[in-house]
Image 1: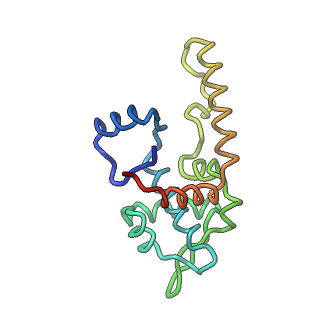
Image 2: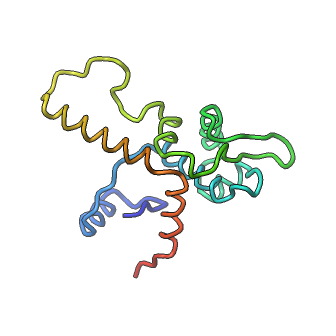
Image 3: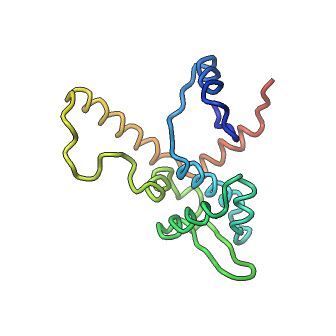
Length: 163
């Protein structure tokens, strides 16, 4: 099920997913907005800097929050920024060289919740092993998917009409 903006009510969204047989992994607003901003920059790649106001408007992201995210992405080396007239933001490298795993790590600090070095609380070891497998496979998918791949999915989705 494609993400929908603005989001449906939780009850409506749940019923729709159940009808369509799909489930969605929950992601933070930070990751959602950050990836949407990067997709906007990928669309404009090679055309010069894009102003944060334009990204915010096109992607329906609050501009003050977007500016915080752009700072994080710049510090992570994923975008470059230029101030002044004709300034704005650009991808630091082509979209096919930026992975979704890199984006999430830049925005969240880690792909997984328990990478802080602390011992996990006592729980079922077989469940922990299963979750470790899940994390490893998910990480493999995120590392194999580039920003260009996401952009292509967005473009294909734009041509799908729902009746």
